[in-house]
Structures are given as structure tokens and as C-alpha cells.
Image (cartoon, rainbow, N blue to C red):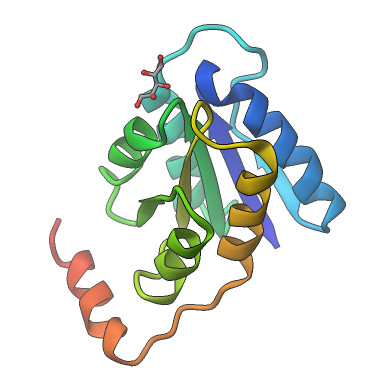
Length: 144
Ligand code: RB5
């Protein structure tokens, strides 16, 4: 499965950790940057990943800033993105099951590496439940 990852400076270390761990797990991980831990603006990297998803380079994305809040706000500006900021494994699972989220937003300053990895793995392996959730998610697409 092809996935994308991006961050700002506050999410850089967690980005590098998750990228390597998810590759070990068999995921093809495209890194949308930044390439070094320097001060950058999170909307720029949310946009890079969102455009990659628009071009079908990736199926899912992970965006990391200090809290995950800025990245989720930025990514959700794009109509094809359903970004969920998650703090727990249950958040990550429910974001897939109920919301068919395609981007997981994480807080690099709030989330320990191992918990973030478990959240990412849960997010990437959990299917959308469809059923009663389908019409609600479809409704989101008509809110542009
Ligand atoms: C950067 O200092 C911080 O503001 C940013 O990473 C993020 O948490 C914003 O939502």
C-alpha cells in the first residue's frame, strides 16, 4: 500500500521514525518533507501531501505538526481529504470505521513514538464500515 507522510519541524522526528517503521512493515512510504529539521510552515507540507493524494500518488496520508491540529485544519481545506486528528488508538480506528478518513493527523509534541506507530498501523489497517456511515461521508463531499 502506498502512503504519504509529511510534517513541519515539530513533527519531523516522529515523521522520520514512522517512515522507517512503516517501511519495515511493508508500506511504500512517500515522504512529502521537509527533508531536514528546520523551521517551516505546516500548511505548505499539508498542501504537498494533499496534492499528492489528488494525483493518486498515495492512498492514505499521515501529517504531523506539534499538536496535529494545524495539519488537520490545513489538510481539510481540500475537498478530497478527510483528515482526522487522533490522540488515541481508538480515535484512529473510529476515524477509519465511521469517517473513512484518509489522512491521520498526529501531534509530534504530544505523542510518544510507539503510541504513534500503533495509531498509524491501526489507521492503515482498519476498513471503513460503510452502511449507515456512507451517506454521511458522501454528504461531506457535497459541502464544498
Ligand atoms: C509549531 O510551533 C506549531 O505551532 C505547529 O507545529 C502546530 O502544532 C500547529 O498546529
